Length: 277
Image 1 (spheres, rainbow, N blue to C red):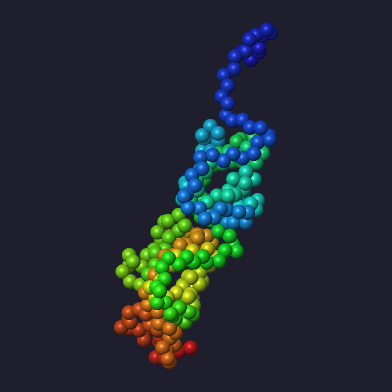
Image 2: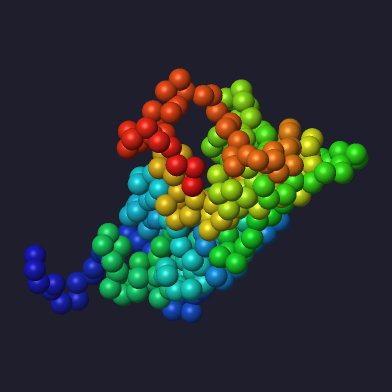
């Protein structure tokens, strides 16, 4: 059985796992691009995306879905394999695409972990959002009253409604569901920097959409259980009331319900005195 006799005819049963040519580049297939695509990713952008990674025969070797967390990276900067770096360029938020990567643009002859050497890789990706570290707040005015004469400015007391969502439309929070407005003194640091910027120069009755990049929102950490890390936020806002500045002689405005034990709660060292500065 171990020796092959002379002049023997041989029969091989072959299963072709994959094939590639050293000259191959990446291939993009099965693109599903949203109807509205105002911006495409460029080198230097920071992307959050989900993926399933398989071999050409369909064997799954990795998935971000199994970790319930997006894969987050800068694109075009060499933080991922060369084929993925190239395949993530030119995507839209919400886009789905298949990226087929030959081994010389993937993990090469050595492979890695569950990926065998010289394997062709298939990534099915879904782009959740992306931004650039140089991005500022984006403001779109959806409605502005014709009789607008007073615009919001730093120090004004504002009451407004909002719906907060991710770029893919996932709703995070809404004052409408709570049945009450969100009330702040503009520019006092009560909200994220991007919201302070987005509420500037509004008039009562105005409705606008404010898109806030993470470095002006909740940053890389996000808010546990509420806002994902490095997420771009979308706020649909309606300004309902504006009081210009603080009333004369007031150091602050109390917005909430007054506790019956207010003095005791403020007097934390229990010395019977409350300092005003």
